[in-house]
Length: 224
Image 1 (tube, one colour):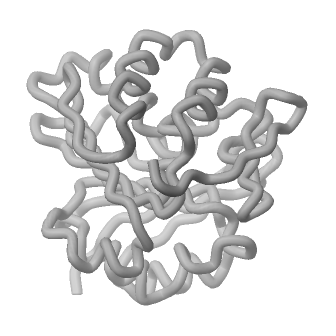
Image 2 (spheres, rainbow, N blue to C red):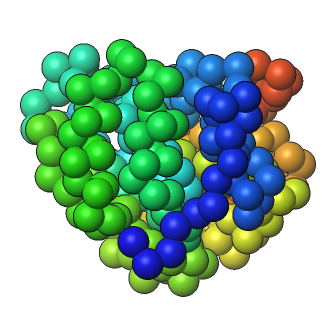
């Protein structure tokens, strides 16, 4: 990779972005957080159907993709899950391996992802998963993306520290790249994010958060 994200470690185990001074996942349990916020927040796995497409802002360690892939496999869906992620600062393979080692129940899927990630971000076809990681600033790459997702994981770093991924113009692009009736979920319940999502056409709901976060956001694309 030409440019990788600098990382420090909380208690030697939880990765923290040096650029944004924010952890990649909750110290209270990254996999449990992903399942609570991004899977349950989007009504998954109940909404899975053949050809289902998840899109994501912020690939990070790949934990969300792995959790969705595991849920897809467990659901018995035929064909692959489609997963597209937008990431400006991909992490190095060694850092990814160290971060994901905390989740032994995902070990088999982690090995498959790492085998691909060693060559850098790109498009990978794995058993039950078609993964594409698009590098660069999402404010430029998302408008050019031809796809539309059934569900979005908004997982940039905290809005106060990574405001670029929470701008109204970008959230409008999320709406434009969501299928009718599609959904999104995010760990943040910041008022300006919820207002921007509502302005973009989402029906926004504040829900109980994970761990120390009191609230999170879930939303469904409405009709205009």
